[in-house]
Amino acid sequence: MEYIVLASGSKGNATLLRSKNGILLIDLGITLVQFEKRAKPFNISLDDVDAVLYTHCHGDHFKPFAKLDELELYATKEVAPTFSINEINPYDELEIAGFKIKVIPLSHDAYNTLGFIIEDEEDKLVYITDTGYLSEYNIKQASNATYYIFESNHDPELLLDTDRPFELKMRILSDNGHLSNEDSANYLCQMIGNRTKEVVLAHLSEEANTKELALNTFLEVAASKNINLDNIKVKVARQHRANSGGRL
Image 1 (cartoon, rainbow, N blue to C red):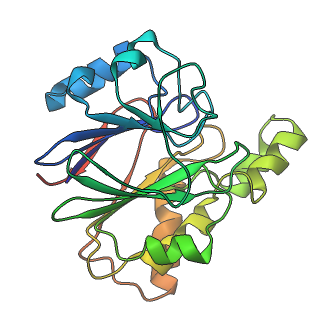
Image 2: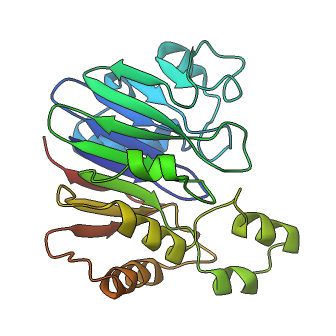
C-alpha cells in the first residue's frame, strides 16, 4: 500500500491510498485545483479515485463540490446531507476496491467523527486525526499496523500562548478536541509493533505546533519507554505540500 498525504491541518485535509487494486481518498477538504496539482506528480487525478471516505463534517475535511456527485462517497449522514452517499457508522466493516476497512469511533466536537483501519493484501494502515483521546478498543484495533497517519496537533504551552479565544483553547485541550504532541506520542508507543515501518505525525497546528516539536516529542517519549525506532521511519505531514510513503 502506498499513502500520499496531500494536505494535513486546519486549512484542509486529503490523503490518498493506492494499492494494486484501487485508490481511496480520505477526506477532501482542499480545493479541486489543489487536489489535482498535488496529486499530479503521483499520476493520480480525482477521476482515478474509487471511493472517498470522510472522517467528519468540519470544513477542513469536507467541501461540497458539485464534482462529488460523480464519486462514490462513504460518510455518516451528518457529513453530506445533500449528496448521495453510502452511509457508514462506527464499527462498520467494508470492502472497497480491494481494501478492507474498519470504521472506528473518535472523540471530537463533530458528531460521529470517524477513524479508519485499512488493509490490503500486504499492509495495514491506521488513519486517526481529530480526536481528544483514544479508547482501549481503538488502541487494540490499531495495534501493530504497518503505517500510522496519526494526529499530533499541538503543544499545550504554545496553544495557551496563542490569541485564540479561551473557550476554543479549552475545547482543543478537551477529550473532544485534538491530541497534543505528548498524548499522541504516548498512544503511538502503545500501538507500534514489529510490523510497523512508518509513522506520519499529522494535523499539526500552524499556530500551536512546529514540525520539530512534534517530531522531538515523539522521539523523546519513545526513548523514555525504551522503544527501538531504528527500523521505523518517522515523518511529519504538512499543510501545503504532499508527503508520501509506503510501497506498491
